[in-house]
Amino acid sequence: MRRTLASLVTGAAVLAAAGDATAAVDYGPISHKGLKTVGAASTSLKLPLQIGFVASQSGLQGAVKSASNPASSSYGKYPSLSTLQSKYGASSSKRKAVVNTFKSNGITATVDVTHLRVSATVSIGKAQKLFGTKWKVYKTDTGSKVALPVNTPKLPSGIKGNVDTVAGMRLQISGGSSSAARTAVVTEGGTPTRTGTPAFGCVPTKFPAALASSSGLYPNQILEAYGIAPLQAAGLRGQGVRLAIVGEAPTPANDVSTFRSCFGTGGTALKIHNAGSIKPILESSLDAMVASMVAPALSRFDLWVHPIDESDDDGDVEGFLHLLAQPLQATTNGAPLPHVISVSYGTCESLIKPYTASRTLVERQLTATAALGITTVVAAGDTGSSACARGVPANKLTSADKKPQVSWPASSPWVLAVGGTNLTLDADNTIASSGAWNDSAYTAPFYRTAGGGGGTSVFEKKPWWQPAQSFAASGKRMVPDVAAFADESPGYPVVCSKSVKGCSGSGQSIAFVGGTSAAAPLVAGMIALWNQQAHNQGLPKPGFVPPMLYNLAKHGPQAFLDITQGTNALFGGSCCPTLPGYDLATGWGSPLADVVASSLVRTP
Ligand SMILES: [Ca+2]
Image (cartoon, rainbow, N blue to C red; front, side, top):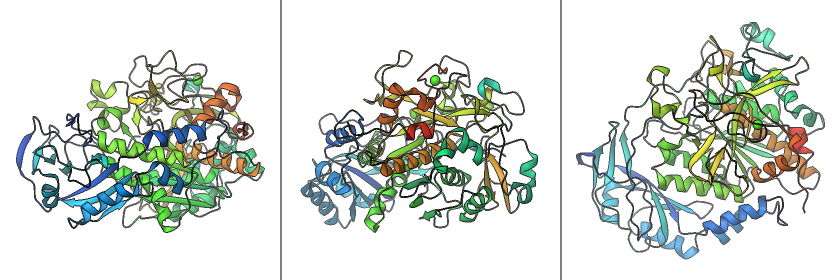
């Protein structure tokens, strides 16, 4: 069984944003121009509003730069959460004015821990009075029904002037024509079957069927290949470091512990938060098992769960915002901030592009996270240079699906984007060859339209730490930053049980799973070890690592396994071949964890 990562989104309606040049408040796509009116919206429907304060976004961005730039004298000096609030967040008077305006209308509004955002759930009945417009239900061109304001909302005094972004005025009532399941599934550096020498752990006795298969690169092999094993042997196992995974569903704790005892990677137990009665998914199992094999002895190992409604036209960006905000929000209950957050979700840029308001709020959340010295590691996607082809059955792929696209939020300048590679190992588990992950290069039965995400963003600006490249559109964010083993052929062995969505068989079994959603927690685990190394040696905190890694690629390229074989194009076209050095299929290549750990930056 093979599976790749879950996505945020399916088909989407593309609506024009209702712009108001003077007021400069972004409500996202709330225009109903050209849509068929269904009727009045029920006044009891609830709008989950997420509202961005007028705050010092440029100051916040500057704080990320000065703390994460290895050439800066303030390298490693990240502000605390309380400094971030007071220096860059909304002022007390702005926060109070907004909260009190809602309060006087009988609505509870809650300011988030960064003081950049406030949330309030408002019935359409109350919203109509508060914002001076009716809401009606409209039918979109995908067949979904949405409630939208009839006129551009008018912000009441107390709110007006204190906020610049309001998401959630548009409420999806029913889903549209959602596309089919997202379950997906040495050519050019890869071998679709097992290579090297696995340590099978408990597999021969507990999972003989997995032993008999030719799939899977096992934990000992991955740890050896990427220079993680020597760090672990030297005592670096994540002690003192906090790693958080965010996901739309939990994993059975028992599957994670079986995996860890099977392969000898036991240590700090995974704490799962807010799982409720949500059915476990394989994605979360993969994330937890891969991160735990790299950094088994973390001081905190958390999985934060928040459901995502994948039938929403926008892929539930607001649900994603909640998901992403949890590790920071948990500080209100006394939880310490994580050092690294692993995210295996994404959606293709053209689907998310119109949803400007909620997208802006996610970007700000990611900026605040980076400013606190936390790296958010995001999977770059599993459909090569065509991110919109995700989840679309081969016979239904349109030319728009096949177009070069990257996945968001991997394309955000505030995250580390991790692409995918294939991997062939020698008998001693050192790397024999590695190429861009692209299963369309294999023949049956290993052929898949699956590969590592990468390309150039259409709406994200090129971050200051990314040097321009002749082969990419100038001024835009290039994806990925790095890449690691993600090939679902042969895949990673993962323990899964019957209760897990997407897992077949009775009781526990081994599934072989791939995707950049495996590569992302792998790199997140490495970042945990680099944090520990920096702490042990009294070096500045690696914090938001992309600038440090790009600096390293320039001055010490041996810290990466440069990938020069293959392309991540699944449907032909010129994007994106691997090249010597940086390329749009694999970034700088695969970080070699021990070399990076020995090259960490000292204070200038
Ligand atoms: Ca390369």
